[in-house]
Image (cartoon, rainbow, N blue to C red; front, side, top):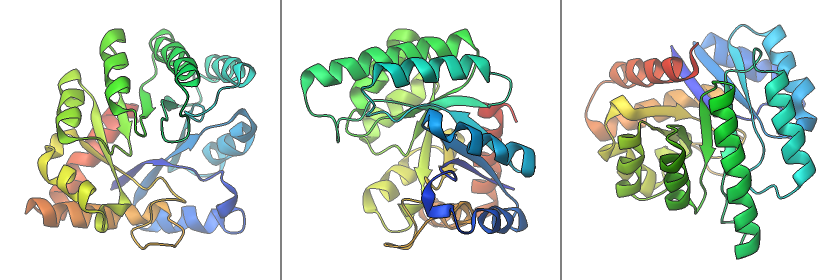
Length: 247
């Protein structure tokens, strides 16, 4: 079994064939952790839990969101849905889209709220850290909260610092052709890795829609890079993800 630890099946790119996408994953023995990142996605996202045995969901908010109302609504929903979700996230910091220092300060304040909430409701935390890896790791250290570092693209030193804190590093499917991700995958111990697609994004084939079944391709590439078997990558990353999400 493989685990796609992070994807977005509620996004409109899957509107025409969502069921078929999930069935393809089922046939390839891929378990899916769907990431809900807006209060508007909640009803559709939880429908997967009722209709498919191999789909779980986390609930968070886009890391570039600056709307106080959406933040509070998401916090309340997480409290209400504590028993229906397997994680809090993705949440975090996004310095790619948010440039102003004042706005970044707001993101940090919101991220701090979500970190503390994850401790309050006892849910594992999934972190988005685009161009903000150093600040995300500092905040996790400050709050003493390990996390899954979704789609990590920081430096190796930062990844190792996160691992020392107890974090997992998630490698997306574009590791098939992105050299920086290949370098990270080669250096990070498999005991600290999980797989993800971030579907519909980051496909192993550029300019195509991604989907959960493609985590198998990521595992194959990581095995090639590390000089180990695909089964070893499968076993370690699956055990890591299932233990992290308690599934």
